[in-house]
Image (cartoon, rainbow, N blue to C red; front, side, top):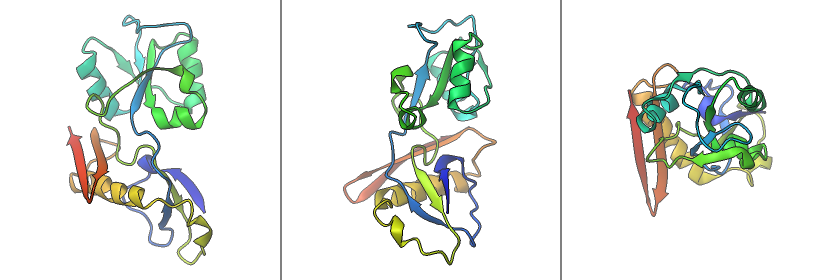
Length: 184
């Protein structure tokens, strides 16, 4: 088996290695992270953000901000932030929470402010088609399946993905799924 952050997976999944289980969704919102000891954004320095989706929405909230791409894993990005290369970062809440770094969060954006990426906060497990995955039954979350089908269908239908700013956020209300999305 392989384990992936579902939002980063391609839309087309090889039939020989299907998605076989999805985690319960962690908080899908995006967050603002400031350098250690800082309490507000210094707009003289760039904001580190490599997501076009986040960039477009962040600049609606902070129109005078300068966004520059930042690469590396979360710890590398935080190190670049703390060394003074950036005045802030925009990251996924789920990633920071899973790493036990929630204390670094300065602001949590509502889904009305920054709509999350499709499947943000969901972990996907992929396995060979003939592999027995019954041991994943307690891990697998049915609500995440329903949410991910809706969100990924929205992105796929509009030809969105990594190259264009697109977002889709679904939540289950009773026996219905409410989907909010956008594409630029």
